[in-house]
Amino acid sequence: MSRFHSSLSRRDFMKALGITGAGIGTAAAASTTFKDIDGMITSGAAPKKPWWVKEADKATVEFDWSQIERFDARKVMNSPMGPPQWVSTEEWANVEKVAADNQANWIKEGKPGYTLRDHALYRGAMGGEGSPGVTSYTWLGPQKSPTPEKLGTTAWQGTPEENTAMLRSALRFFGAADIGVVELDENVKKLVYTYPRVAPYKRYEFEAVDKGYEDDEKWVIPSTKKLYVVSIVSQSSIDGYTTTPSWIQRAASDNTVRLNSGILAATQEFLRTLGYQGLAGHERNAIGPAPAFATLAGLGELCRNTQVLTPDYGLMVRSVRLITDLPLAPTKPIDAGIWRFCHDCAKCAEACVSQAIPHEKEPSWDIPGGWNNPGKKVWYVNAVKCQSTRNMLTRDCGLCMTACVYTKKDYAGIHKVVKGTISSTGVFNSFFKNMDDFFGYGTEFGPNYNPLLGNFNENADDFWTSPIPQFGVNSMIGLQNR
Ligand code: SF4
Ligand code: SF4
Picture 1 (tube, rainbow, N blue to C red):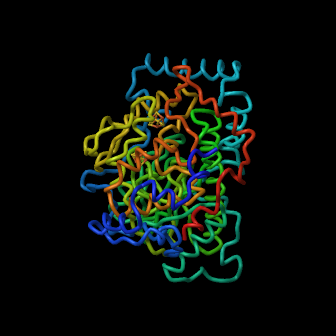
Picture 2: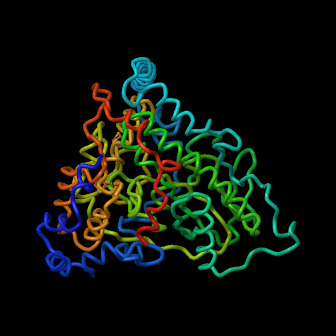
Picture 3: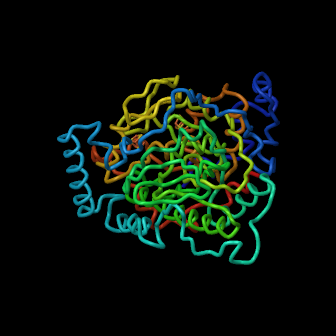
């Protein structure tokens, strides 16, 4: 039950703020272009983004491409090869033991969020990861659909703009929330990993060939033609995430991972029948870092917990990528005030049980460890702290994602007013953060849950009696904004 939207109208909300449309407009007039408060609520806006999301020539986070080199993803902490590089054998063995004990004990004891049915939900959501036809990511896709030659015709021809619009329609139809596109130019090539995070540890290689392929040693990306990276975001269930920390939250994450594998396979077959290639990687985090590609493609802004924070869905997304030779019109980065807001907020850092997210107002160029690729000025998360805690919480956490001010159900549309204001002025940032702490905006969530200290999310069981939308998400969110 919401503590906020059910009893407060928009008018009451503005009165409570102590600022009328004119008042807030006065504050915003000093910053950037601003539309009145009713416009914020009712605007159908641009066909592609809510009106308060501005396109920008570069991402709001600072990149220094001269510092960025292709990165070996076997170094990251959530690679099976990561922890031994950054944590002592004894320390990691202890983490694994605590994780195994917690899993067994919490199921037996029926702890909230960690019962057998909660665990079964997670196992079902994963779909037996790697199982053919269920959760199976592949470099070239199923390769079953007919090519244009087989159909007695030639490849699809459209302008890049038409093709991007066509691809967005197809992917929305397949289940994605949104897509963004970047050209695979010399800078963006530096974001393609050298080796992947999980086995098989074949190299990603650029070769002077027309068609991508794979063999026992490498995944090959053609270097003779113009290519594009399509970033895809799909929604995760906020109903699942608000049970965090729990197996249900993990299920909410892996439900999206399972759907994403199907979306990628469908897209690969769609492209094949159009006469083009789709190279998608062999696992959920393949090709390169999701936040970087999604941020450059304008699906959101990089945020304090170094994920991509989307204007429409907050942090309730999982992102995958695909490389194609279908001529596309790249999408631009965005500025919705999110990056600026993170400077004044730090709510995720306060919610983090391992204190892995920096609290400082300003981001930094300095990396905390070799598990990071340098070259961006961000709030680097201490991945050793985060991953150890996630493991001990039996594989995931999600407290930061759920605590985020942008991760809201937003039934009343009031949150749109807040987001619109944030995009125009930073004057109210601290106020909105404090107000979010107080009201919760419809997300029943306690940031102090830490099962490692015996504090379980007592509301987790409510998931099993709440009405759950299909696939666990509200598929109308983006449309209502547009
Ligand atoms: S997932 Fe959990 S431990 Fe990791 S940064 Fe987020 S809140 Fe902290
Ligand atoms: S909780 Fe606040 S600081 Fe953290 S990602 Fe969300 S908006 Fe940014």
